[in-house]
Image 1 (cartoon, rainbow, N blue to C red):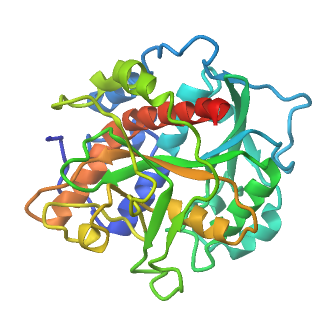
Image 2 (image 1 turned 90 degrees about the vertical axis):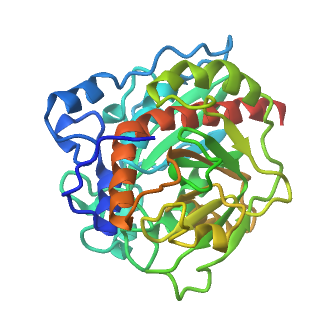
Length: 371
């Protein structure tokens, strides 16, 4: 797959990671790698960011919930059947367009419950402390087939918040307040292995740290986690794969097959790797991801923090990682070129691949009814 790239731009990995977290695909001025900002090409990408209508099964279309009275930003989260958390701006917007139609993230509620204490462990310059934020994230609620769901876009990130890993405490707080039957951590990821195609959605109850930078000396730097408790039914995955995800597949580059949901098996090794810096797989296995975990399918920077937080809890709820491949395995002449290409592909397709993850989250919540 090819994409337009601006090779002269800064490709520092930390800067790219921060750009991906903050990048708003609906703002033409924020494009840097796929196209030049504020150009006709950027405006065309923005104009296209509206998912085609998804043919939800009768009685299962996501319906945003309205709380009365409206919650304050310092209120705890309400109890719900499921908790879904994502991380980047693009992920949040795709999740909102699919699961809270008519309620964009701009209309979600700020989450500042316990924030004055929690932010003491966040290092200066982190996304949550930027002007106009000063919050742990934003949240809202939706209903799927009679089940209530809390959706959150986190502003805490293991790669940006410092050595105290404040998202670990945030996870414990969120779970304690929502008391969900299921927790889903979801978003974009780099595909690992040539068989993982752009837009594939990896569903796994096993995650593993591959921390070689900031957290390399922590006791859990290479720890693996497996969800305990009964996992939700996959009974709606067939509908998602054959009727729902294909509707928006045309927004991705042509491929030998449509994107599909890929699930792990009960005894499989972790297929989701969480690094503590921006890493991706390439044909040369530069970062050693396939050497470290031969069965890995995606790499990202958040999900093992949920596994770590759940290991702190006496009775953690079942959880699952839902990650869409927002860029495939890279294969360019230099690492700098591959980094630039990965960022360009994310800008152009991160939103669209996340539509598939949002549909997969829908399928998991719908499956709770038969668990």
